[in-house]
Length: 152
Image 1 (cartoon, rainbow, N blue to C red):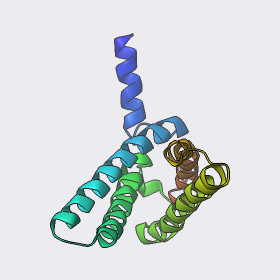
Image 2 (image 1 turned 60 degrees about the vertical axis):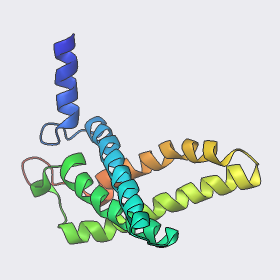
Image 3 (image 1 turned 180 degrees about the horizontal axis):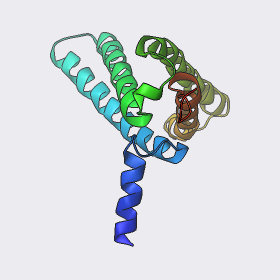
Image 4 (image 1 turned 30 degrees about the vertical axis):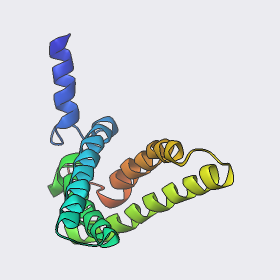
């Protein structure tokens, strides 16, 4: 059983061995955590360096976006040689998907917190799965789509 769990973990965490949605969704969690850590670290560094809060937040969000893009491209979806678009075209598509994620979160917060009076923190947490599903599917089918195995 333990050997089977290790095999499953390896297949889910290795982009060269798992091109399935389950593996990509699992790796997306790891990528998101790393981007969040980069966001928080750069934000803290900006504050320590004396940047204004909103400037530090903007810089950290930009860095987190680039970090997440790189991890998503290479780790989440992998097999870069099979990806249909080059990195600049992918990044040009990736940024709008991030903006859609932000808009989804804002819309969910508006409806459930502002209009219906639910706790904003609970609503924000509840929005995470919606944004996560959007992120995985938009990455797989819009930004990092691949040529089928065996060529075009």
